[in-house]
Image (tube, rainbow, N blue to C red):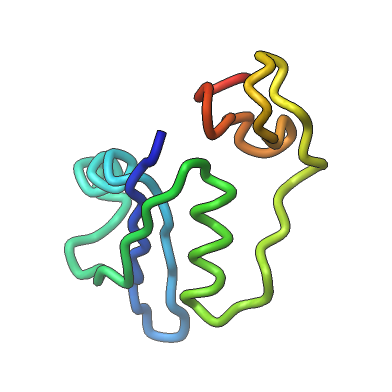
Length: 98
């Protein structure tokens, strides 16, 4: 279940703010005025889970490797995939678990 994510940057006077979210999340943030029109697209990522998107984002940004919250666990639906119940709770095969 691949999802498209986008990373946007807003440059302030002394700091840059980076937002990573699904395309739908980014559109919602823009509608709510929480991501200004002045923000610039950094990159797009297609990933099966938020953890995978964050890992790819860290690589693209040249940052340290991404460390998901908690331990990876077997999907309780028996699909054979791993997911992070303390993180997104999202299985790459089954979708939202918790």
